[in-house]
Length: 329
Ligand SMILES: [Zn+2]
Image 1: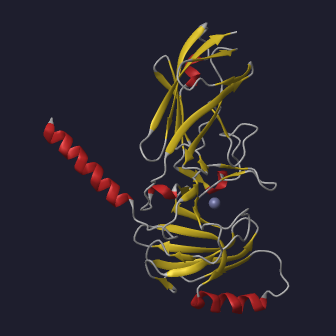
Image 2: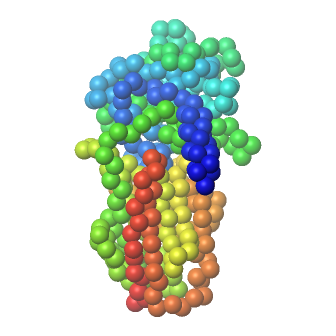
Image 3: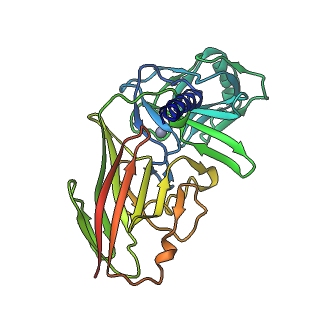
């Protein structure tokens, strides 16, 4: 038994080390947003595809390359990403993205200035694609200076990890790849449950009674995780158990880029960048965020009561369980 636990500990240690293949692009910073959060800004509601690093309300903070690679492309004046850099990492077959930048480093600026001259007067996005392996980037090199260009309410750095797969471009949770420790206090919360019968405030220390109609409870849940005094992020995983069986689970690890602008299978009405109403039901399984969907087993059941449990989990191993007593109306 002791041997097994030592082995498991070593395995955990090894996977923890190997999963952190990128260094944070902003030094001595903390995250202010997580992967998969709802964004309703503009005309195109979408998932937040990266993690945001605080630049402490400042602009022109040094942005470091997360690892070695080569410059893949540069965007200038993208309506959402603003000025952005894409670095390819052949070692891992991943691309890192750095957005809302003010400027690029001097050697990149030389190319950008040349191209900008050709596009004088243009207000749309300019894309400069570099040949494979041509423009080498060192690990930890200063590649740019942060800002608030594009869709950014305040200065910060938006950082993404993407992978090219046979199924298309997949955006991954950057937290899973980065050497980042969260040292602030963490509070996971289920605040409310709602369905066609109404809204129910959750009892934080006991059971909550929720009425439902139909053959099983089709609910939206309002969840969040508070980090320290001023950051609100999305929990990593939310699961619904009915009578001890896992019936529905959302887990924010990857999004197909083609689904990035269709958050409606996951998010309910009233969601904002800090209020997350997650749907705990779906009619399709095409979204990578829905990892378990076994509600159909209750389609013809006609129970008057179900013992529900909703479990929230965060990225760092914390979890919180809530007991819900579902009673048929
Ligand atoms: Zn962001």
